[in-house]
Image 1 (cartoon, rainbow, N blue to C red):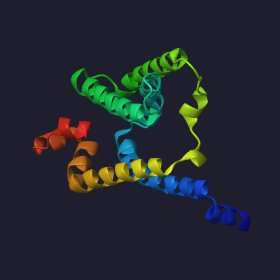
Image 2: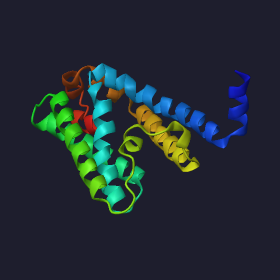
Image 3: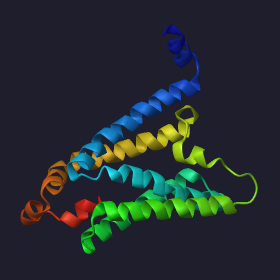
Image 4: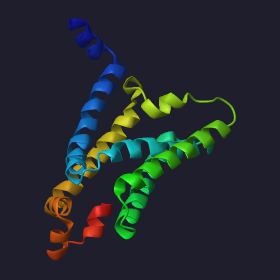
Length: 180
């Protein structure tokens, strides 16, 4: 056990991994509560796998895969929200379609990228030991944004999560909070 603490205290990559895990747990804890209440647990897998499309496009264009992942996650969420609200489709159906589409686009662009071919598994599963200080900055910034939004709109999120019709009757713009 002491060798673990020795490694953590002396190796920067271990410190980054632990800090990154703690920061990620903040966002997962807050967002996960709403995911469970809305019964959209499938959403986590859908977003995680659909962002491969954005990463593949960014990699193909010579950009950072993280930027592509962020854009793809936002696009995925917007499409999911729009289709679920406007077309009255079940969310799991839309999530499954976007999941498969995002993966296909990512594989297509990564395979067409000239030069060094990246290991696809590293994009899908990552490696917590490879978290950089820049990644920690991104995670901390997103945590701050998530906590601020939830703090400011807690009652509205609560109403929309449990009963959209009740929230609508109370004058809460359900569509706005659904997308947020």
